[in-house]
Image 1 (spheres, rainbow, N blue to C red):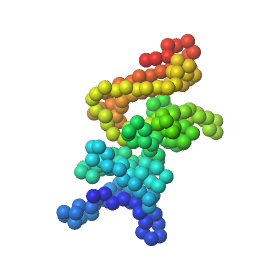
Image 2 (tube, one colour):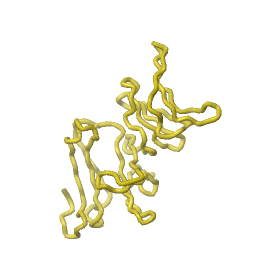
Image 3 (cartoon, rainbow, N blue to C red):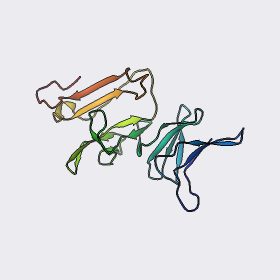
Image 4 (cartoon, rainbow, N blue to C red):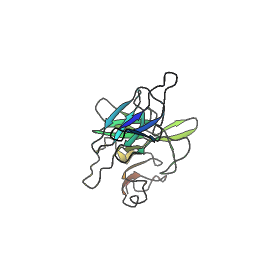
Length: 192
């Protein structure tokens, strides 16, 4: 059983622990990405638990069987196409690129028709990209991506990437990558 967040009466907590009701023992778990006393826990199809805060911020995914965090530290998550997705953000440049990424609602949102929007925005002289990462691995199968935007009209410096990827070294060489972009050159072909 996962025990997480809450309040000790004075401070809102980011602490997490695993409780074994059979052995009646408590063992430490990595802290949440942020303090929260209004947690929502959603059991995912594979048995892992997605924790979100009161504002819909993603605080981590925990595996209660393996007693490990899977993803912790993504400050925001969204629900799109029947799945939970983490929104990438960082204070410095991150891959791919490297680029600056923002989890702002100006960069990533789902509209009232259920369509995902990803934007590139300029803030304080820096361009910020948008990326979402699925909360679960989809495994082998058929993948279909439906786009409402005309990808042939993108700015020559913009790239739309639809890909499977894992940061786990055992799996990161199994990438399926579809890219629309001209890589900064207007007359380049726009798909790879």
